[in-house]
Length: 364
Length: 130
Image (cartoon, rainbow over all chains, first blue to last red; front, side, top):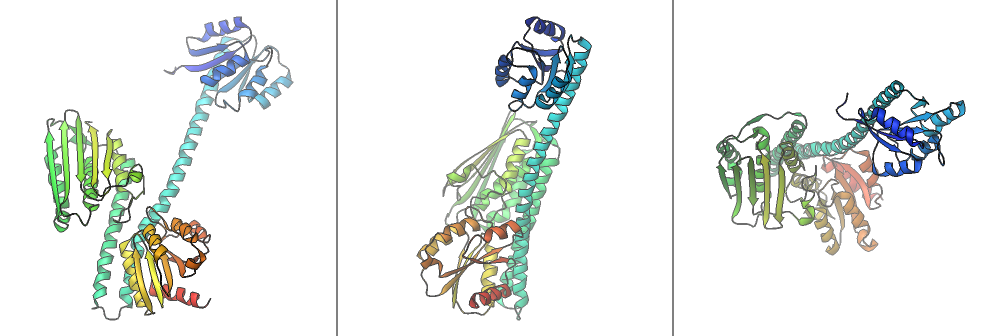
């Protein structure tokens, strides 16, 4: 037997029948009863049932009329008609107008009702599962469409830049001309873009498929790795980088690889979206583990994000500026990973002053 | 003699297009590069020149994309618009983008990247023959 009881609405104008039905089945199913079609309609507006059993012969509205009147508003419940006398016409009506799943003769016996209920419920779960799956697939298909469009553009873009630059080099007779070097430099940059994009796509894919690999976190190791990774960029662009760590819980655990992707993305962004005119460019990173929680703060004094775009920055392929190149993958990946790890991410930003990204993660 | 306005959120493509224009060895007055379409639009509102300006526009760009740019451009007065010849310059191979581009009377051509001096020469030829 299912742990969850099947929810059944039983409608009959004879109150004795309602009592009898409830007495017979209330231990196995969740039974709601109603003595008129009108009352049942009201009940359905505020409640859900998985199966509805209804008597055919009732004053005001017959069972078939009742079923055909609720079918638009409440298409999901499976309908079973209970009737004392069988003429072929009402059976046909029941099937055509009321979309009745089963037809039970009165006086009913317990075994027949039970088997009808079980069968109807199986049908109910199967058809609902199917509907959910169809909705899921429709959504996934739409997403895939958008995804394919954006990805093909982002993959093709740098490649077209490379081909354009190659074309210019090829047309230049004297390969020692200065602009040949410029074009080679462009080719290198475009190749870098392409490679970053593919790397991000890989992260996107891995986060959607992969399982978590929980390990103990060493903040020292993370700091060392991150500083080494970004050292060159900081030196080249004269950005001061500070990385504070503090932990009172050596047992704090999470998926370290995913955690590093999050931290690395936030630091890369902080370094990337700097303002050229700022003399003291700086990025402050602070990671604190206190008991069961880790807090990551990444703060920069760079370009900042316009307020109207703040709500969109975590969307896939969204970009808030064309000043600096980006794929629209980074923060989306960050947000997805943070939620996979059970955490939250917040951002505060002011245009031309900088941004603060705040991530909170629980120990796993 | 022609002016050029190139709008592309990718700096590399701006440089490639500029170089390709120079390599056609056709008479060029000014080349203006823009990383974002709204900046280009602002520029056009106050730009005055005795020569025809060829506008090369990328489609997929953040904030204002190439379609939004053309929607705004088409609302300008005919006096302004007659000084410009617009063409999309895109890496999109999507047919829908091509169909959407046809909605804009000012778009004279849909050019696929990579942009080369040969494609530009073809564009210049088709303009002068009209």
